Length: 423
Image 1 (cartoon, rainbow, N blue to C red):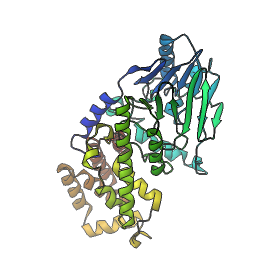
Image 2 (cartoon, helix red, strand yellow):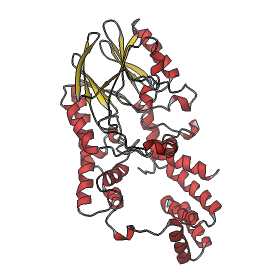
Image 3 (tube, helix red, strand yellow):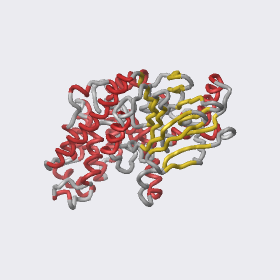
Image 4 (cartoon, helix red, strand yellow):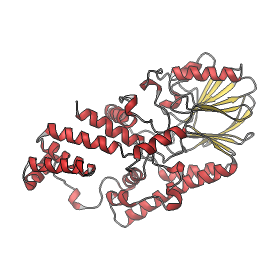
């Protein structure tokens, strides 16, 4: 989301959302926040430790291991992955000397066949989204946690494969005296679960809640994230009498009243965007029209845990549109669009000259119309005219937009692409 003070708002969020701390939630249960890009949950059992997620790198997991020894002399025998994202599993191998079982759930939807053929572009876009190649001074935050360890010389991913893969919707088990319920919970990923500890009324929710607008769509690209199923998962979480909710990123929710209020508002906000998008689609409105008009209602828009610091409402709207109706917006003009170069050359001819267009771009940048400026730059780049100056001016526009962007993901994308244009 673009705001005049977007960068400053993002800085304030990053300071407040994941301070480095170990929070004792209940007897034998600790929430580890701010030690990695993601969180970890330590559960002390009768004769061992159960670990929910392992931080993102081996170096950070070694610190986690030391934190555990400060709490208990018991060793980690069980690891539970809330889902397969690497920042939640990257430290696992540090515990290979003691762990006996590693638990995860099978995805409810298979990955599209031949997705591996897209690994180059997906990795490139992930690098842009997360700012992997940016300098520390260029990165305010990686969005919902501190930068991943491998970007700041704090280790590398060291995965361990799971030994137990459940396919059920729900599994009730007792691990070394700890009663728990593991529940399939489609949302940010199709293999997501939450962990319910009934004796302490603690619920570990993975990435289906963190204290800002979620990535209903990831800029790096992914299969459609089923927003309706995500809402159903939040309803399921709310049906449990949790007094503590421990997310995979950001601080915990503590107290039954806070849990109910925050998760209900979080759920209602997502449902509002989904419903408003579907209503508009049904009326024949385009993704562009909907993304520019759908905003959270006043009673939700100002809530601190719904700020657009990771995902944004507009990107969510576009993803929902594409997820339900696909790329075609119903306008027959779009059925056989002119190739980019041909379109750009015709537009340049209509405008009159490259110099006239460059003058307009510079004026737009000077007057704060950065979006208009970079779109005009794309005409020059598409027409393969004055490419050097067009890339320089586009990079300038992208950097200016990055100062306005509240989303860490969007901000990184602007800066990374600007730097690439200047190479």
